Image 1 (cartoon, rainbow, N blue to C red):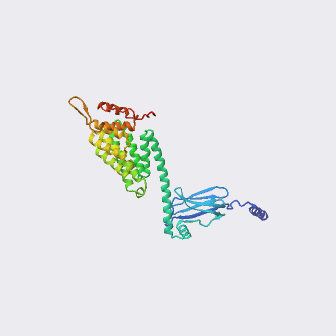
Image 2 (image 1 turned 135 degrees about the horizontal axis):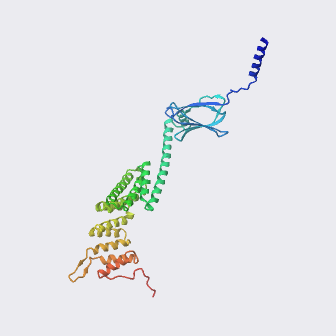
Image 3 (image 1 turned 90 degrees about the vertical axis):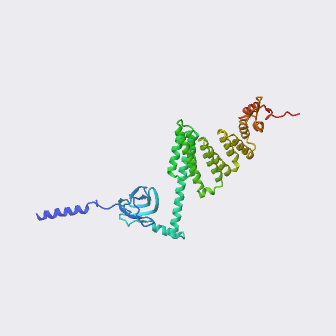
Length: 378
């Protein structure tokens, strides 16, 4: 009986010695702590371990203490990347993983920054300021890119008279960054354009008011921008802003406000003053202020003697001051015929050529028909 027991025990021992090591460890364990440049835990960050041999990735999350941990990482070399909110913070290449528990692989951004600063001959504070400036510049670049996309889409919509799409797009742009004068200017243009499509008088009035607010916002932002003040084209840009604000006031029958803003545009951009002054003449003409209109068109002619339309509309306003003699003859103010004749001289086949001839006929003046024709050689 004893002999049988010994043989059985011996058999079990032999089996034990020959059995495979089913529980031998074949993977490694990685862990570490992640802290930012201020020494605080980086919570909710991602630590990606990517095998340089297979490309397999292990993505680990940091806890409230900035810690990460994982079992079952296959041995080999890894590239390790620390990211937060999709932005890479730092990385290490060729980190070895062996069987069992590995030493802690920490990410201390404060130490990294100090070492990097020392290597560049800077203090940690100077390097931090430099990095923050670079990050700000990159953020600005991305913002400008997105805003330009919105701006382009809005302008395309306005060109197709799809003002509602333009308004939606520009308002989205303002939610991204409400400090861009160009966005406000285009928003003013969209509201100005859309106002003209409204059949409800109250809605039309509201949109004109909103457009005026938009243009004024653009003016204020650009006026207070140091960068804009250094722009060599700043005066002409500001003139365009005032011009469009004046258009809103003109369409809203606010004559004095329209004239004031057209004058500001002319003062800012003397090169194109003739165009802005012409708009003043148009505002006065529409308002029935004949004397003011004539004076405005005289200023246009003084600024640009070749602007044919100024002569025509000066003549139209002069006609408005004509009188009727006792014999029924029409007496036009001095300079009326000359104004229409000058228009015909400059644009003999222009838009207002026939109306100009009709006006001359109505006041009994000579109609010159030879303008624009070549004289025959003798």
